[in-house]
Length: 297
Image (cartoon, rainbow, N blue to C red; front, side, top):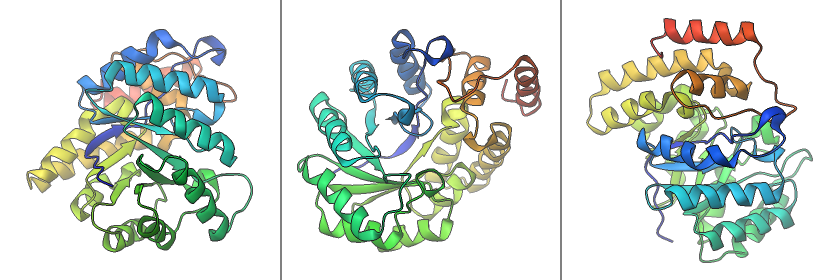
């Protein structure tokens, strides 16, 4: 199946109203447009940074529809449709196909421990429910517990025609290079770890999905564009700035840092949803100070 994604794909935050009570749909479309205008080639919707697992299936479908209706012709919209169970994952995946998403990315089912046999069946069942539609794997064992090994990803890529890529957030550069080396031609290996976007692009990845790109997409674009032009010294300078930014944003451990950082850079994305916590006044002041010192505001 012919599907390609290249460039910077922010893992879009989801705006919520006060106390996370509702999705703030007045902000969803404008946020998508804001990111695309700043250089996003695609948007990764309702993923980890998007608090997808804190949302109902109906909310996730409505957010995806709003994003597609706003920027669907300007950027490739990828829906994260993975859930704890197969049935809801298939429901969200079929909806993504029906409403015009470019592809889905499916995180490994979490909480329980699953072996490769169970994971293989899960992904084959999901991909088989949308046979003419691009499906990508999403490996983030630090959150999902169950890792998709390079060997399993490559096996699925070879056995299932519409499994067309993987977003690798393992934090393991060795595994990323194994994927690049062993995947079939045309398989999209997407890096999801900001600390080595430069290295991943130099190794041959064509796209990255990033939470911090909500705030500092200019740094990501600087890395990507300069690697493409072989301006490696300049690309590395952007990577060094991104590494510092990742430290400021605590590597995505507290999503309210991303949202406050976005406010400080010109867009108010609303609130987080509990049990995520908002920043207190002292934390906001400290974040602004650190961003100013880093030249981000």
